[in-house]
Image (cartoon, rainbow, N blue to C red; front, side, top):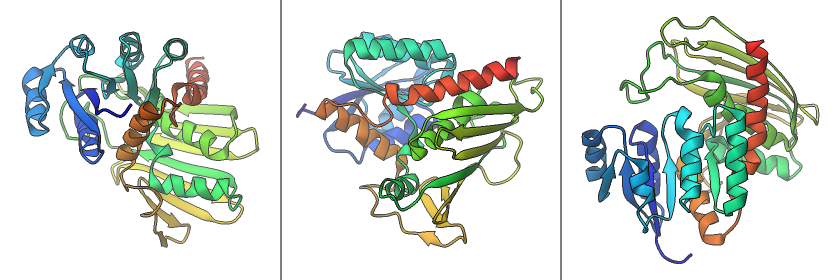
Length: 318
């Protein structure tokens, strides 16, 4: 594909805007349609980014012949059904994490993706952050092997607000959304499937209906282990902090920044063409479309993560 890739983006909230900012830096790509829940707010964002078509109906955008690909930044509960709608409409699709919150729906997405042969990937951004890519290069070069990952995913979210401080139309989830990043990254970095997984959770929030605290233990087939702590109750710095403990060193990854275990900063500016993990994720999506290949973080690659999440949910329910 040599022509400009025309994109529809669904979800004009905090994360949709991150994608719009990233796409501005990518040649040969144009966002031509923006889909949002509230027309007026969506049009405001569309005007800022010079997007011509605005709608509150994804199907309206899927009906546009010029649209080649769709990026979904919509509520978790819509992800699987909307991904299926995009594939069935003949559009390449990138869906933000998580692919699904019901495992069998993820399996159905993979089936349809194989049937259509279209590019379909999930926004497992940690695979693309320069910090984690730097560690991955070390592992692939045989210079570092993970013994343990210690990960903290901490937010302060006792009310249903998004990253911009706006009321959410849906409820976030520690297991299916936030744990998915680490469960996938652990197996990806180890190059080894997860064979053991255990979890416990704290009390269910009376208004939000979700657990606000969770602890997860993982073990990969190669013996590496991971301990993941998640909380919506943490009144402090927000985000996810990864400690890689290995045979030749210790590394601390904070989004796109990387440090040694002694807090010495590591220069990761030359790892990729950008320091922005979301932009790098989008670059991979569009490159895979142009080259007619499977992208990193394709449905087939990440589905094992959702099987682990499904098994952990069964543990919690029992």
